[in-house]
Image (cartoon, rainbow, N blue to C red):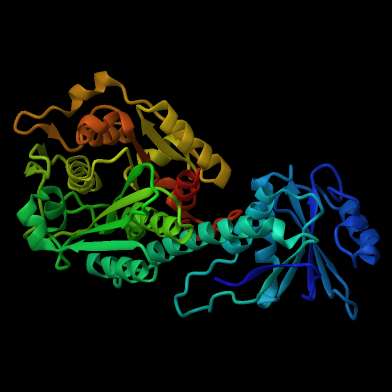
Length: 480
């Protein structure tokens, strides 16, 4: 990640000033920094003639040839809350051409939450997938303030959240010609090895078979790249609660024998976005040394087409000993999650279980491109996750778990269907997962985040491609 540091005086040639929705500045321009008196009138006039200069993320550019600073960006912060400052930071990072250094003037009295949002926005807006085509941004950003010490903790929190999002984006953007289950597991081991106090275990096919992970083995059975299960654990001695995170890790999804149309298959490298988010959040918890035990389970598989692929009508025996009749091999994510959830309940003794999955297209139909579907019987847990999503800009909406839908799951030859044809698609997927929670069903939440895991174009703090949705939200929730 490119450096952002707190400084008392700006050194960069390009200066960035915040513009509030109520007027050209939230504070007296003379208070913004010691050397801005000559700029105040110019920036105020620029904002006076601009349309909605205070809208969060709006950018006005003031060139100043042969003067210092050489260019000024007036960037809208909206209502000057954390989200507005995050949008401003992202816009400023994108407005900086050729990786030019920036000095962002932080007005006196700005809250630490706002500075956290600003720094997150700068890092998120400045993200690039390192694919060899364009190098990552490296130019330094200075946050100019009279009180650098006041914002040190906010900058550390922003750095951890942005680092988690960058990693989740990198993992999700990686092409599936590179990203198979073994590769993903190796990335987790490498990242965990850099952080004291983290442990990571990779389960290979023989162990998965010996211990009964039938769903994971069925889904991965059609691929030349066999499945894996990664168990990652952050367990500080002062922890007072135990959270289990589970993330769907389908490194490519053809749909299996129930094959997808070409257009639907093109972006299926993103079908491990849930796995990327939970891994990144756990690494972030270790970076921040959070006093919470986090056990993270990542079932990894490729859903491929071959003579050994599982079929519609197959009966699959899961880790918990129950069975599912496969009705659609393109409903594979819930099968691998079922094994991981069953293992979590039986072996890990969690206080809370949260799973994230790019599970259904119905998520986008119901809630659009930017909002995940949240399912939980626990009002407090649902409220806490929702609040973390609001704070980080990773939105979600709570959906129902109606008991009368449970009859749609019942199969004649197994304990349940994998994907009933009745009921709402996202709701029925959540109802299916609920079957594997046992006595922890009241301490569980499921997030169907297929839609917000990918952005068709840069938008606010989102870069085109993988968004890393969920990594920052989970880290904020774990930090609460």
